[in-house]
Length: 66
Image (cartoon, rainbow, N blue to C red):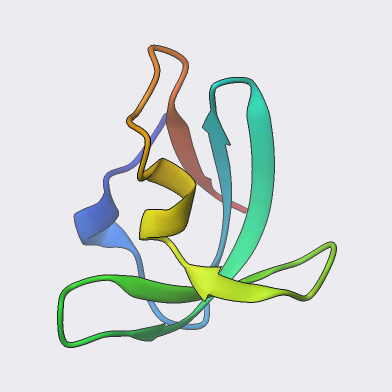
């Protein structure tokens, strides 16, 4: 069952599916603006969670804890 952004926790790993693209990330920290700094588990790149959904959420948007 998909979860919401308000249930994200630092140190946990999540699978995000949006527009058919799948990202597996670990939450590193929460910013003062309410965004999250995440690390991609495949490339080890760090970026803001808002970068994944900045163009909108599609009908297939899902967020799961892994």
